[in-house]
Image (tube, rainbow, N blue to C red):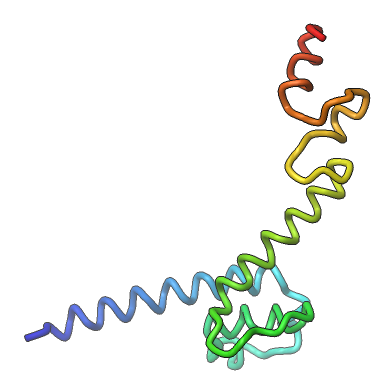
Length: 117
């Protein structure tokens, strides 16, 4: 027999985690949610907040697709793209910091900074 207090504790833990995710999504994308009142935001789940954010960015979710995971992947892609712009078109490298070097890797920059190249 399941203890109802354990079920209630499990549900409360899940809801608080969902609320934390929703709050983070809203805080990171205030322009998406500015027109909603507190009641609408309260009724929205984290997955719905993620889906709304993606919709505003022009991304449509497939039926049954996890909105939270899709938003994480979308944000990772945006970060990768920003990295490419920031680092001279080389995502994940320091080529902008080491523009005078022929190589775009971190070791070349490290040794260059030590004066060993």
